[in-house]
Image (cartoon, rainbow, N blue to C red; front, side, top):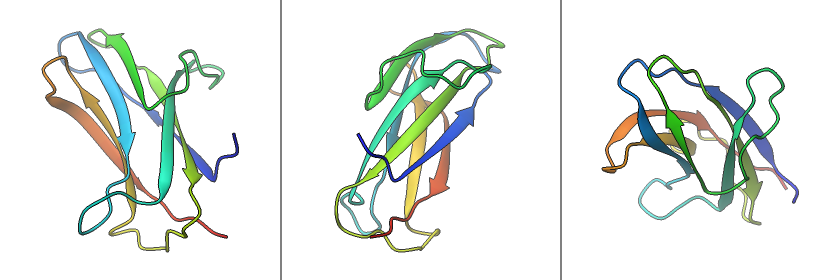
Length: 113
């Protein structure tokens, strides 16, 4: 698989431990999604190597005080995503078993031909 870009995220759980689902998405301004595929994995903080399967979500137990890390891979799907950091963003979300968002981050995205 060829990727257009990649970014990583370090997290810290300052609350109670829980089974967390990490996901990444790219909503388009005005509805729909940006023309990109987004995949992620949990990584080893020391080596940055994936320690989970690459997929659209990662489910992992994050206990109090733990600091898991994640890598997010972006693949353009043909259409160009222009440079517009206010509108074109990828969101990394962390939700508990009840679907409540417990943390999130975002990064600007663009693709080139």
